[in-house]
Image 1 (cartoon, rainbow, N blue to C red):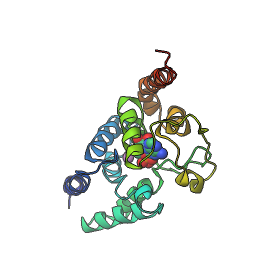
Image 2: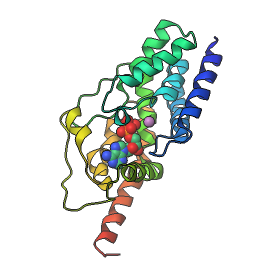
Image 3: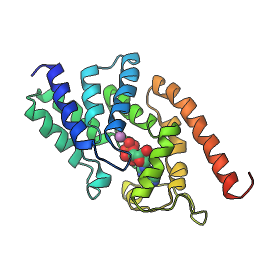
Length: 217
Ligand code: ADP
Ligand code: NI
């Protein structure tokens, strides 16, 4: 298959698989990440074939929905690309992206090595920020049956992936445990710039939320 055909087939497969997803990882998340990744990848002069495949496949089998297994996504992506007869270099590069894209806790050292992976990771993180990011955090928490906020809990800083995985804190705590830190974790200059406004919006939202919580507004 040509690169164009491989991209098309991957997109069709992912679109179908994610159409009915209800945790904020639906097809439109993938589509937004693809658009972000295109903008960042072009500006950073990345290999756009790998960037687009990485964006399309990055959530193919997330550890959060597969009993905490963080290897299953890379395997699923590789299997699909093999079916498309993609070459082994491409498969290796895309697999590296899928295996390393997820946030695993604040104290956990980032493992993404390639420029293309850094682009996809930034694109994915942008979608956890801003108005869309707020909507997704509460959609995810609701899916897990968690309260929107519980002021008796303390925000935590995960030192290991195992710790991060087992926490059950409220959706609003996720802002302290991850969302507020994403801006400084952006890999690329372009990603950092794009994160600015979305980060500011999150802070304004949190202030308003806490003021309402205390009946001050
Ligand atoms: P990443 O794209 O870094 O892997 P995730 O898959 O962890 O991100 O998260 C997908 C979406 O679900 C994001 O918008 C994220 O903020 C949200 N999310 C993940 N974990 C939680 C949680 N514990 N509480 C609320 N939202 C969450
Ligand atoms: Ni994602």
